Length: 275
Length: 311
Image (cartoon, rainbow over all chains, first blue to last red; front, side, top):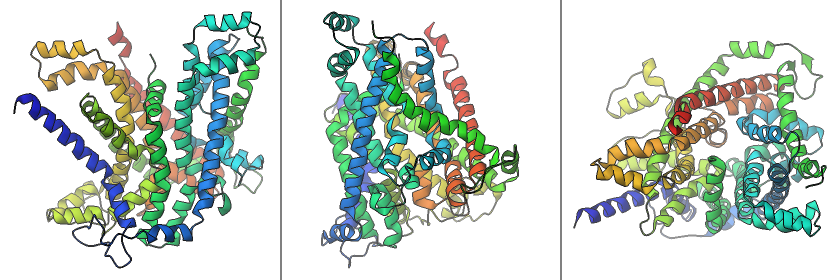
């Protein structure tokens, strides 16, 4: 073998080794979820492939918690958040990118400055506002406080900035209204940025934990993550059920990510480093 | 030209949400921090008492020390690991997209699932101990053990010590930091990858032609070229590590004996468990000051002469 082949083999070994290291916890989770009641979870050496493989732990987890309810709640909350975020971020980003008005720079910097204050710092006053608005224990209470953020506005602002001015002028001559220019001409041109924002927002909201934990007390409104977290108490230490439930919660996000992954890398590089 | 009212109409809904759910709570934090308030009483103005209380609160100092120690473990490790990962996946070999995708899966895993998975790995009879046992080493109950990392390592080789220097960082804190590294490094890897892909190929090739070995190319060409990305990674990782909440909530609840209690979690317990709303707001502001200060420090160190590079 020549030097180049050796290097290639070494690279593949390193890549594979890291993949195993990063994904082993998931394999262990799946293995646990498929183990029979009689199988020793703490056997040494660890048994990676269960014998026999049983699926009943999933059914059991599904029985003990109203998973369907949690799935629907989570789905509804995630979709509504995506819709609001995409609409309002593109409207705000559009104005900041294409229109000239006094205070434009100030508003842009103010929006960007919000990223310096993490959510956790505002947790308590945010809860108080939500309480005063009567939104505690409601879908709106979970959605509205996190629906718009600097990432979305800035991402869309950057996307709208790159559109040539001629398009706008042509539409203007044709007598289009401002809203018409925005919704019919400009928005279709920033579809990739919209898809990126939608994908990010969906996963973020699907996985969100701290805010739903604070704002939702009624178990009928619980998201998957809240249900899963509460499960640890319910099952005591039955790791088979907990593992099965975790997998039920994990699979939708991973599938969604696999289908939309190209938007993820795009969004991160657009949002993280400018210029 | 656009109608002169249009910009405000377009921005109104988005900015309204930011005003109600960001600006107002931010101002309210300052106001609350000067009051004694438990959500039910009439807020009572007490000046800076909440801040004085923090200065005398031993638990606050303990938690602050934990948080800084945690950031000190996480930020440098994450920067190095994500850079190395990016170097590895910055290649055009067959199947590289599979690896990039596979590495990213921990990032899209929710903190609740991640916490459960790792609790199971760290369990006294869990995967980690089984692996260690296979290597002939003895494990421990990683999230419950109150000892420090140095004393655990020493005891694995048969030396028992209670010395103060061996008690920090707590083994449970390191265990939580590992989860953060696992979950966040691939995210920063993608940021570094964007940086690496922006480096002109000729630059590295020229250095190789000049006889530089791989290590020298990385050190003198690649690293300086991705410096703006390093700054972004450092600042983002610092802020993220200082606000860590989910890992603590799901895995340890701040235990054992507050050894994994971090500021965000402490604020949460103060506000929502003990209803010490005013005091919690004061501690939140202290956390905000630390975040702004450390971001500034990062900027000075990692990006201090960024403009100089461009000239």
